Image 1 (spheres, helix red, strand yellow):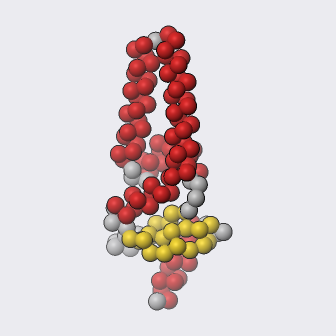
Image 2: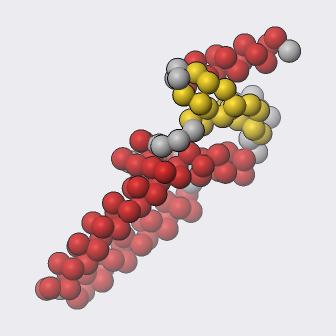
Image 3: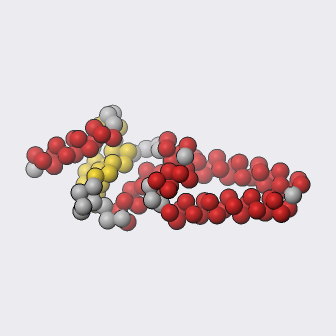
Length: 124
């Protein structure tokens, strides 16, 4: 069972945010940011990597190899940070887009959490 937070937009859209580690944010960081509509963070990460790659291309030689290693280490660090904090970032993003926090519940999966929430909402 997974603990999830439920957010609802005034337009009736329901979003579920699982608590804890985010495997999608860890594995697909940049694309996950794009899918979750976190444009600024995606842009910062993309621009940072472009700058490092550009510097490596201009510098060449041994510096380029060092920058490749730095880029690899930075990528791993970014993946870990987003794995740890991805769901918190998703919550903040939903709140900034007009979603309201509704409840925290336990369910076996995303669809189960939505079903439980909708059932509880209908019962009220």
